[in-house]
Every structure is written in C-alpha cells, then in structure tokens.
Image (cartoon, rainbow, N blue to C red):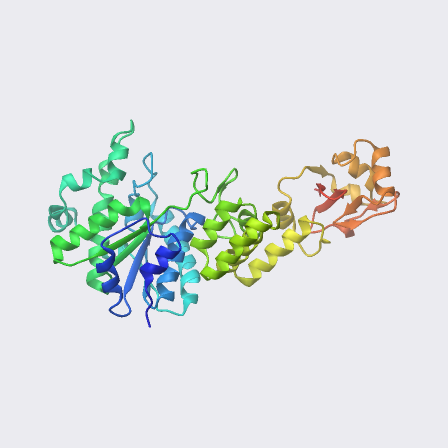
Length: 425
C-alpha cells in the first residue's frame, strides 16, 4: 500500500521546489513507483550532508515505493559544478573505483533495512563505451544551449574569475541522460535531490519530453544548513563522515548533541523518522527546558543508530559517559584520544612506570592539572584527584603500567571537569 509521499515531504519542510504537484501525486498514486536520487563518489564515504537524500529515499520506501540510489561512477569522473565555486580535482580510476565501492556499501546499509526493494545503480554501467560523437548526436542535439546557460549553477560559475570548464559544463548533459535512461530501464519517473540540483533535474525532465515524449517529475529539498547559513556537517576539524574510520561513532553522536535548539529541531524533522506528534512533543520540551537538550539527545540517538547500528550507539554513549565521569575500562588508546581530543596531554617515558612507578603528584603537576606539587597534594587530600575516573585519596600513590587504559594512556582528572592525558611512550 502506498501513502502520499509528496504530502509527507511537505509536512516535514522537505519541499523546496517541485514540478506540478497534482501531476506528481497522480503518478505516485498509480501504485508502487521508483524514485531516484544521485550520489557522486567524490570520497570513499558519504558525509552528514548526504543524509538528507538518504532519508528522502527511506521515506520513499516507507511510502510503499522503491528507492533508486544512483552512484555516479561516470559523472564522478567529471564533477558537478552545482554549489561549487571552483573546479573539482579529477579522480584517478583507482580512486574513483574505491570511492564507488565505499559509497555503495553505505547506501545499502542504510536503505536495505527498510524492507522495501532497493535499486543501487552506477551510471558508469550505461555510459562506459559510449562514444563522444554518439553522445553528442543522440543526447547533446536535444539540449538547447540557452537552456544550459540559463541554469543558476552555470550562471554563477561563469560570473566568477575561474569560470567553468567545458568538462564541468557537460555534467548537466550526463545527469539529464541518467534520468532518461532510468525511465527507460526502470520506469523511474521521479528524481529527488537538494535544491542545488534543480537545474540538473529539470534538464533531465526536458530531455525526457524531447526524446521520449514522456512526463518526468522532480522534487528538491532545502539544503541542510545551520541557522547562520553555513553547511551542516562541517566542523573546525573537517566534515562529519558516515564512515566510522573517518568520524568515530562518538564524534558523530557528539555532533548532534552539540547543535543549538533551532538546528536540532529542524534536523529532527528532516533527518529522523519520528512521527510528527513526537516532534511536537520535543518542541514543547525545548521551550520548557532547553538545558535538558531532549531534542539533541533523541536526534543523536536516532541518527547514530541508523548510521552505526546499536553497537555504535552503545559505544558512543559509553564514551560520552566517560567524559562525564564514568570509570574508564576496555578502551584503546585511539578511542581515548578521540574522546579527549580537546584536553591537554603530556608524554612521559614508558620507563617512568617501572619499579615504584611515577608519583601521581608529579603527573598532576606535569600535565598542568596542578600548578605545583603542593597544589597536587591538596587536590588529592581533598578528594579531587582521579586516575581513569577512579578517585585516588592516597597522596603517595604511584602510577604503574597495570593502570594503563589501552597500551600507553592514562586519563587524569582534577575536580569535576579538568582532564589531561598522560601518554607513556
């Protein structure tokens, strides 16, 4: 049974532009349809910005339709100029192949849990071997130059000093042909994407009309941005990736926890499958007690579970609890470095743990948690000194290798929130 997908998108603020809504609804009401979104493999992992399109496809599945995810093995060789201020660096064939494989794995992991039939396709499969003259004759002939020059993505680049290469200018033709090809091969007549894709989507719609006398449809959603207009998923240390090797489940979880209220509310609407009444309840809680950060916690929970599974969510929660005082155990050096990335650290010789060990008083002073040894003694006497979040009351305590968490790290703490890492190398 299918549900009104377009109304679902509208209720969550996910429609920025669309073709005729009545015609679109009529097509979708005809049974289980196929709806596609494209992902260019510019890296071997998707990032937070791609979650909008992934969630749109999950909503497609929830409405009883079949999501089609296109991975741009062909278009990725060129690069989409939409939303870009400069030319993309071209990828080598080996880099592109690795990126395609990584992106396909992530797409399948997120979409195949819907229980609906999922199509993951690669446009290199139908573009490979197509000759330049053949493509110009069969496709380029039907796309007016005035139409391409009129697209915002093209005009904005042409107005810049760097301009736009013929290579990137041709991207629109390839994406337009993708749409027509998928309508031929899968009877897929709806394309969805971010608002920066409107020009490419409408180029495909027009090509379908000219080549096939076929009605194709398009929907774009607002780009995922913060209240200040900057892109969501960017931090001082870089993008928030979906691959745990690039962004740990802990850092991913913490990204959502640290959003401000307005951004968290908007993300909960667009990126989760929480029902609308649950979103209304979260909005009321934000107003009544913003310090509790209920929306941020629920958002972090939903998205971390979606991207990293229950195991990843459990690890993220454990790491969060450790940062707020839970006793440390079973974490390796890399995990500790991730959790405590922003706290001071000090390296010691590994031999300092031999024999009688390193006096805790000296470690507290050396890491800056105490200004002097006398201050370090007072901290211990007053119950404010911790090793791996375990309180130490003995002023004579010496650090030994058996206390290491991981192979080389100890977490020292003074008071409730002052942390430092001691690394023994």
